[in-house]
Image (cartoon, rainbow, N blue to C red; front, side, top):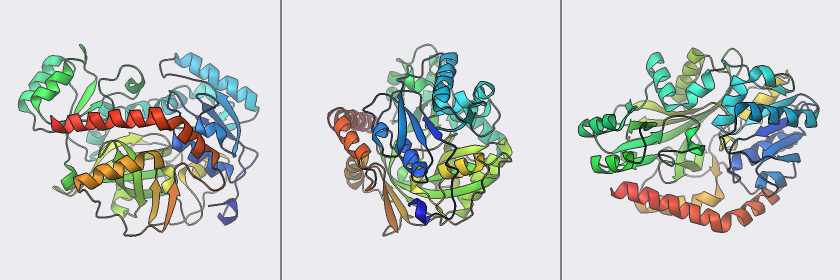
Length: 416
């Protein structure tokens, strides 16, 4: 949607900065945020790995700050780096984190960052807790929100005990927000079919496994849903969207490859009530799985920041969650409006292998509309084509090898 089609105007005197921590240059969410606000005339800046990061080539980006990070840096160094960038921009700037590490850093070091930057006010400890599998599970139990049955073993012996009594298959995930860029026990979500496979994996996890062992919700009896929203300082939703995930990569357990905007009042109410109880403010990206066996939505992930597929969702007034945040933090009203139903979102570089995998499995999503009302591509945009071609140039060989390794890993997990 162009700026001419919106029912509001943004404050063009307040820029925005895309903040990322870690090495993941092919991130379409950052490109989407640059385009979304840039089309409104908001001056856009971004932290990038290098000058060949696709986001650095968007026509809507005023300047890219090449700052390669790993997630292992001392928080003091990260804060100083952000403050240095803030001084270069030279005026108060809205921060848009694209990963949990950045969201946690901003919340925990809000006192140092509050001068040159604008961001939602949230309890400093809350984003880290939400990004942690254990912390999220505890909050779900505390507030009566359904979530998959989970175990958090602290020793190999506890894994052995779990294996003796567990109902397989189970899902293994890293427990804390930051481990994926340090020494992760597993790469992404790993499905484990039997005790022997679990114990073989656990032997490589060291003295403290650092994983969550979670109930597996079979895809034949489940549906993957997503909620994206923006909440104000009173935890009231200023923008709320729901949708259904059709394909992901790796299959059934990874990043969204294709999704549709589908209204779901029950799901929206569940998300609103949970966020109100915990007192969160800002953008949220929630993953939930509807378990047809008991008719409940179970919260899998709570990302306390913008999700990569946020551009799936837009209201009739032209609002998405990133625009809602910028409007709110600059003192402007966020116009109300129903979400545009039936919109489709496709991530071009991962959807083709996902499509082939899903066709082989025969899996379909019953709530996906027969025809989309419109399609938003993650990378290719008529008014901003360079990120797409930069992505292709960077993706072709290493990206294909990475997809192949993910596919082999998922096939091994299923075969065990």
